[in-house]
Structures are given as structure tokens and as C-alpha cells.
Length: 228
Ligand code: DX5
Ligand code: ZN
Figure 1 (cartoon, rainbow, N blue to C red):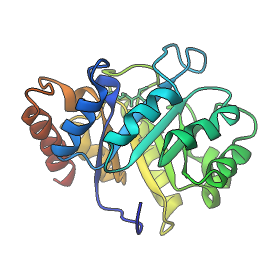
Figure 2: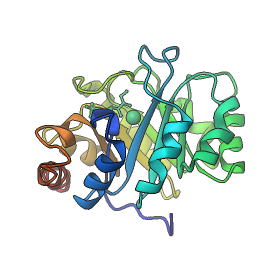
Figure 3: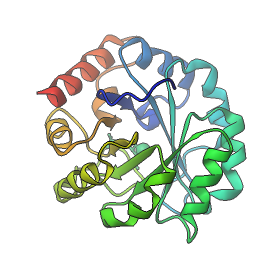
């Protein structure tokens, strides 16, 4: 990544892609206007679902020309940081709920050469990340309970997003939201101050690698809705 840029980012989550065609899916969403590629790693322990690990992230890496935004929904995190660095993650985000030493985790992510993100579940208050702001490049506010795509947006998270936006102030930290973001909820999160919007089902819905223009239409619609 180059200089800090708070312009709106749309980050399609490949959790909603065709798992047998990740390379082609990544190329398709980037060609259709994705700003970042959001990669959801789940361990069946921190969240009740399993996706994939560093080897698959490494396999996707050559196809990503923008930013590979890796969201870890795993516990513990620390034993795997080097593996995700080697796999080529640009941003590595760990959950504040994933262990007792998140500050150490964030420092280790930066020491491994990546941007460090910290994620909060819907039930975790904004204050949980206040002591961490010197050590992060991104705060990720979950707007659903992590684990699955296609869930309903939790409106009670909007006040927290606004509080996080205020806490971040002028710091060079992205405020990302993840879960249930579509054309109806994008304006709400943008208004609350989010600058990076993850969207899985709302981007991939109705499209395919062969009908990739649908991805482009979906991305453009979410962006337009967010920008009002
Ligand atoms: C949920 C994941 C999300 C998910 C979003 O645990 O972190 O990134 O893919 O999917 P949608 O946009 O369908 O809610
Ligand atoms: Zn995610």
C-alpha cells in the first residue's frame, strides 16, 4: 500500500465466491472495480465455521493486484502470523476477543511486515480498542456475528461505528465494516464514518466469472449508495 487514503474502499469478501475458482474470481472482482480483496479465514473454534488457511491465501496472492485484506477469525493468532506474512497478506486483522494479549499480537503483525488490523464482534464495545490505536492500521467493526456470509446487518452497531470514527480522529487508521453490507445498509455505515466496506453476498449475488459484469454492477451500486 502507498500513502494513506481514506477514500471509500469496497472490499468484496471471497467467502461468497466459487471456492473452486478463487484465482478467476479474484481477477474478476478486481477487473470490476474492487478496491481491496477481503479474505475470511475461519478455524471452526473461534467461529463455528471453517474456511481455509495460509496455503490457500498464498495460492490467491499472485491473482491480487490491489490489497489482500486478510480477516482472521481464529484463536490463537500468534502461531500463524509468520505463515500469513509468508503467504503475502497486506493487512492482517485479528479479533480483540481472540486472546488475552492482543497488543502483543498487533505488534507481531507489524513486525512481520504487514499492516495490523483489530476486529471487534458486535457485542464488544468500542472502548476495547482505545488502548490499541497506536498499534493498528485498521479497525474492523463486525456488523454481524462472524462465521457466515449472508446474515442480517445488526443496526445496533451503528452507534459504535460512529464512536470508533471519533476515536480514530486524524490517525491514519481505516475504519472497516463487515457483515450484511448492501445498498440499503451502505449509506448507514458510510454516514457513521466507515471508509472500507466489506461485502460478500451483495457483490457476488447474481454474477459469476462468466457474468462478471454483474459483480461490477453490484460493486458500483454499493459504492453509489455509500456515497449518497
Ligand atoms: C463474516 C465474514 C464476512 C462475510 C460478509 O464472518 O467476516 O466477511 O463474508 O458476508 P456478507 O457481506 O454476505 O454479510
Ligand atoms: Zn470478514
